[in-house]
Length: 368
Image 1 (cartoon, one colour):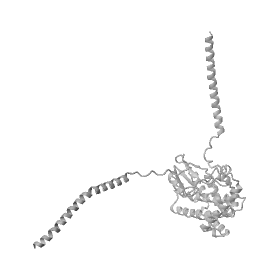
Image 2 (cartoon, rainbow, N blue to C red; image 1 turned 90 degrees about the vertical axis):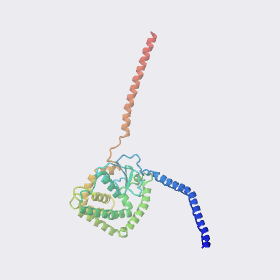
Image 3 (cartoon, one colour; image 1 turned 135 degrees about the vertical axis):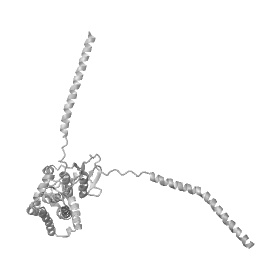
Image 4 (cartoon, one colour; image 1 turned 90 degrees about the horizontal axis):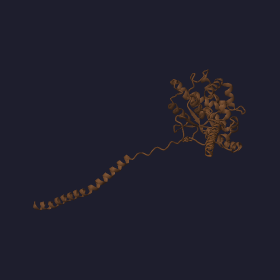
């Protein structure tokens, strides 16, 4: 028994000793651990307190913008159309229809949106791109709604027809433009010198334009799927779309009554690209529309009168902002300055004369 007890004592003593050493080690390590934990906690607190970086400045070209003025970046004017882009014409027609203050920025096609598109607008230091998004956001900002009076079934019809126009009919005339760049330039009376603000002769610019625009256009139409058909088949598809619009409009002033809606704006901006191509060039789809779509022809005249009463002035002068007051001519300003200078001169002469009189009086007194 005693031997067993003697053998166990050292074991118990060693365990106690180890436990004591462990406690001492913990006591030694604990301040450091506490310090580390404290530093980690302070680091986390510092991270939480660090303010987020300020947002980047707005990406706008018009730095001195006026509040609630829409700055529209689009294509140039032509002698037959305010814009050769149906999407640009759509945005400008919307702005004019609802009397929203805007200004065209004559950027000579130098700028595109962050999405790589034209048109785009800038409003209060924010860029908005894509014509559908532009109309939607501007409608919300200015409290207007082109489709506000439409029933649900009418909105559905509107959506379907807009999709047909912008995703099908649009490509029919893009195909014609791409395949016939000479006719397109001539029929739209397009001056690339004016469009680009370039001094390079139009003949050279036309060659470059035909090579680039035509090639890209044909590729896009083919990628869309329409370009795989023959010219005759594509013409027939365009006629079918026009017939649908002609029958849907009927004898009404506008598609859903006596007020234009979003569908009217889209239809006007696209059909203008067909109907107003100058008759100096052959264009089968234009001729078919003018002969077979009296409802659409009347509709175009009504929309043109509502949105662009200054159409002829635009197409004659090619000015981007005929809807804004003309700036005061420099000559008039100079004329106003001249009388002011004359008055200043007269005052100077009077002061000089008074000074001379005083000197004469003083000299006379001294002589006495």
